[in-house]
Length: 506
Image (cartoon, rainbow, N blue to C red; front, side, top):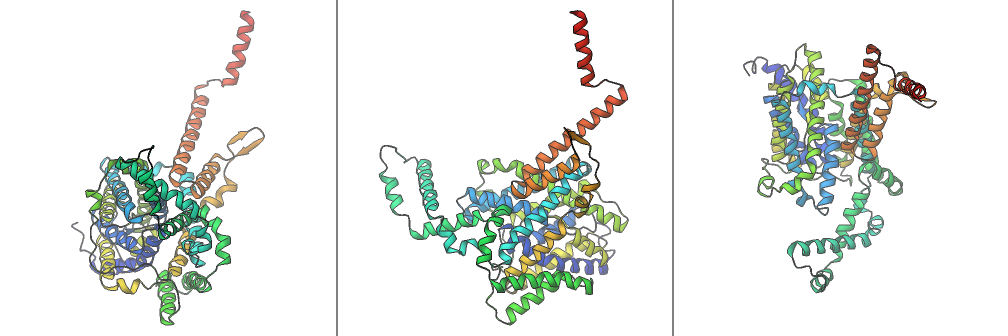
């Protein structure tokens, strides 16, 4: 803290530049998460400020990132589904899980486990990061085409019968909870069922339709319908955003191309009064803490998500410490991993209380900060303050940003986050495992297993399975090395010797 004001000019310019880069990404990640742009902006504000203030990497700029958002998106969707598709009902549980993840990060730092994060196998990280990119790209195809399953009434109507069953099932659950469900007399049940309105069925049908088209696999299934219902204006806005992001980088890197694309495409859409779809309204004014996290806390509602929160905490730790290494290489300094985890945990915990999505150290924003003159933790704090000022003064203006523009931004993020280095290395990795006549690389197997399972099944379980396979591979290698050094004969040789011994005894 004593060196906080030794580089005010450089930190101010670095922090402001990084904050400008963070703005469109924060809004995009918020929309992608399912909680809206405000949640992304709140996450960027609080994590950036407090992770910088308490963290162990002086030049780190933190906030919502692609990996953290991808995992958060799955968590949010799952909790909403468990709460009858009601976001408001699910929100306290969602934020409690995010708060728990932040507290776990503080615990990891306090227990000085930061130095061990780097031992997570590279194939697991590589497969996971590539899966994140694939998930982001696939889930943004539908909004880029201007297709929203909840608004496709032909698609929604196919879920009406299922919606009625879900509503009736919820009625039975409510009656059981109230202690008035009597199997011999369904009079109350019949009365409540008779009060089911068409609007209630429609709302539930829309929830089921959105759920069916969610995630990478759901998006793939919905693409044929999306292609039949393309909104050409939305598609042009998304493609224009992507073209500007990649094209402007070839002209100059002095100005963030993402920000240029956001301003240009939003300006065209608003200036020509095009009939586009804007993002959700961003309220201006001071953020208000969500005290329902504490007042309506139920251990039973959070217990199933403890492992999920731990995974989120570990992912944030990995994401942040990898960025810290990048910052070290650029600034010729050395970060403090345990202190960094504590700072990230504090930032994520406070963000959760105010309704923000979780985040971590962001590589691109950190690099921008360093190249723009940032040297101390003041730069990260300034980035958070800038976003807070934007929230207070420009909330209504930011609410006019086209949703397709943010979808275009996210597609470029998905493309950028994939681990091409790992993919390119696949043909050159040694084939160290043989099953019958087939030889293959165990590292490639781990990478592809994590990639496929993360993309089409479950991010959390995929990482767990990848770690188990990697651990087994490590134990096998250690066993082979130990056997070679000690001169222990192989099991097959022992079996052959045992047979000879038995034959002699007989």
